[in-house]
Image (cartoon, rainbow, N blue to C red; front, side, top):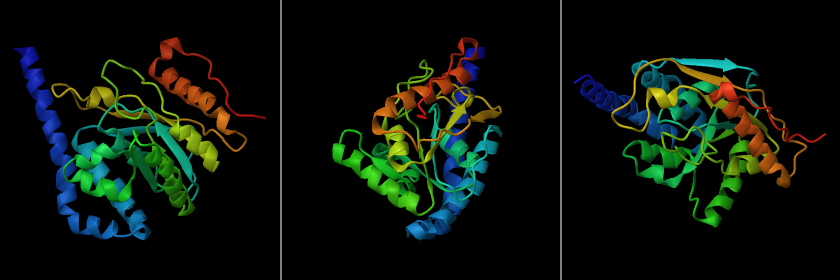
Length: 256
């Protein structure tokens, strides 16, 4: 009986999440549409998403962010933000991490999500991972956004892994792009999102969301062939947070 009640509570908790996602969008719909008509108004859209939409969801779910910065993001500087991908809360939490506007790079399938997908395709850089031309086009669109003073955010796992997987293998796009555009890479670990709102419909519970923003990695001296080592370096940073009992030395990718 107790297990059944917990499962029902998990389902209701997920339904409440979708309500919190949709209601602010519907209320602010005219403003959201106006701020997505042009790339010049993206910063206004980002402000609405960061300061209204994301807090309503996070605090409404009973999941207040607890962000620890080991190095501060500098306003006006562009970065490559990378984090482990564990939950639907990741997007909202990432919006709270950075006060400076950034653009998500994500898979095109998210366009199919009702209401959310309408704005996703207007403000994010979409990629079809099965299409080499689409993958190459990401670099061009990313450079355009960097030239506008924005940062880029990628979840290097390429999607949310199975719940039993602690950290999935990394795609190389974020690391190749960071080196190609010579922007500092910011590793960010989400420690609690999977427990708070996993993709299993019958699971989930309120609680704080801890985030570690790690010291930035300078890619200015790296070359294309260093992307794998850079990926391994970031992966180990994440694993040291997620499995502190098996902490390992972090490999270096920075050339002298």
